[in-house]
Length: 110
Length: 112
Image 1: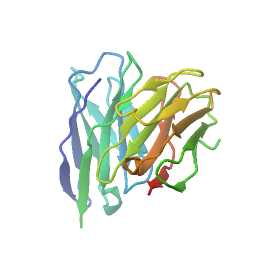
Image 2: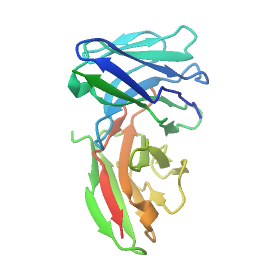
Image 3: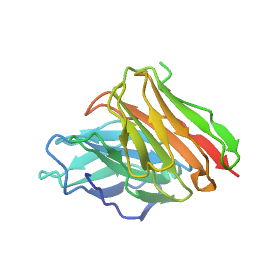
Image 4: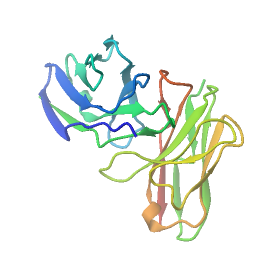
């Protein structure tokens, strides 16, 4: 399975950019990288996804390296409400499995 | 367009009882997934389906069965509930590669 590796925790000051890294070195050429977050035990919330090019939406930016082995989620101006567990996910194209890693607990401090 | 709906949201079962969780989506999505999440843990894949009439095992399939008789519904069954199956269960669906993955709000199951 396309395994992803993320740091277990990160801190960020309110108002600053939060940069969350993800390693997905076994990703295949047609597999997308997705980022979701989860606050407490709520359902995962969609943030952004991409294939090769960098992507930006109203929530975040996604930077994917040229070799596609890693990516970075950027929250440009973190707020206290961005405190959550962030998951980087790759959906396998061979068997369509969608598995989660342990994610990164981002804590935004005042 | 209601997205992904899970039923029931809360349930308490006695050990040995059976029950079925329903995941329904109205977006004509091909792929559907069932996860469980234990306290302080990430989501673990139980079973999934790549289309109507298909099912496949995930990471933690033991003790669960699934069925996808209709494209819009994915059922997760516990034939003989055990306390170890106390968890929050999430369902997800996606149309195809590159599309957004939609998640339900979760079903809290307690087995006593």
